[in-house]
Amino acid sequence: MIHLKKIGFFTAFILPALLVTGFYAGGFWNLISVIFAFIIIPVIDQTVGLDTSNVPESQVNRISEEKYYRFVTYIWTFVQLGIVLWGCYVVGTGHLHSVIEWVGFTLSFALVTGGIGITVAHELGHKKPAIERFYSKVLLMTVCYMHFYIEHNRGHHVQVATPLDPATARKGENFYEFWFRSVFEGYSHAWKLEQDRLRKKGLPPLSWQNEMIYYSIVPIVFCAIMVMLFGYQQGQINWQVPLFFFTQSILAITLLELVNYVEHYGIVRKELSPGKYERVNPLHSWNTSHLISNFFLFQLQRHSDHHAYASKRYQVLKHYDESPQLPFGYPTMILLALVPPIWFRIMDKRLEDWTSKIYYPSWAE
Image 1 (spheres, rainbow, N blue to C red):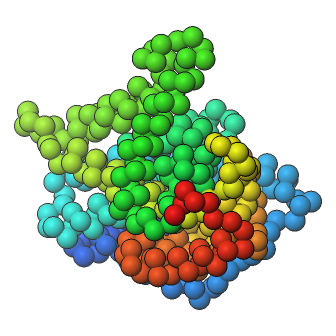
Image 2 (cartoon, rainbow, N blue to C red):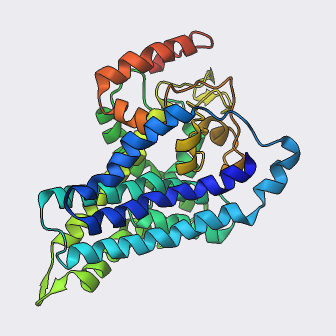
Image 3 (cartoon, one colour):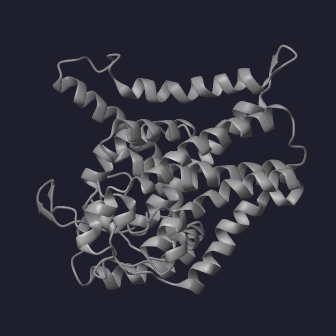
């Protein structure tokens, strides 16, 4: 099984391959990545089923250090950067003609940069080597969400499953309400975290050592370069390049927030004293071990173990039977989250069954 998974993690590269294939096939084929992600993968997911096996404890350290698994994520970084350059070229040179081509190409593009790209950025951003953190920031730059590097690591992982965390969905909160709170409060909180860091160093909040300044500016500069390279024709700026770049960024961010919504909906930690909560453990995130979608998402769906041990590498994340379990893999859960009545009908009962076994703090009502 370990050798199968080594090959399986390369399945993520199917999506950019389908993106390119769909573009050159033209027309409706630009939607092939969307169909693959939200129809074909869920069907295969349910057919193949769960993989609840874990890497033996005696092999965890060895497999964690295998360079092969890092190589996969490193390669993705360069593939995504190349795809973004190519995408801006396609748009800037007028190769998209019909509405279906524009819609299909942009949606499929966001699946690559957001569905897989932010997942890889998330994995790399938790690691100690400077090169991995740099790659994480490069990937986040391509979707205008670089503050995620601060907010996720220093905010979300500290405050998850508490009322302080904007990325933890409340019971009864639909995705659309959650999106606005998570996006805007998360960005604001990242500024606060960075200002607090600078104050401890005796530096003013608007010091040039404030990383949020760079994280806010760099994506705009990157887009401007794309416009200069691919969108400047006959002495005029081609508005299609920035429109495409920022649209795919919003869609990629929305995919990320859909995943956040699914991962933490209604889950809470016990408040031990005012403002002090129990330590995060594998009970505090929804988990699913569907084999196929976990290949594509670098085992992000084993989210319970990730939050309990944030620095763990994706290849050794564990399945816990004790964790709250989602009924389907992320692709299906994302579709359900977009339709609140269906989401609540499925998840509220599951959440109530789960929380009745532990506790349900009043703030989550």
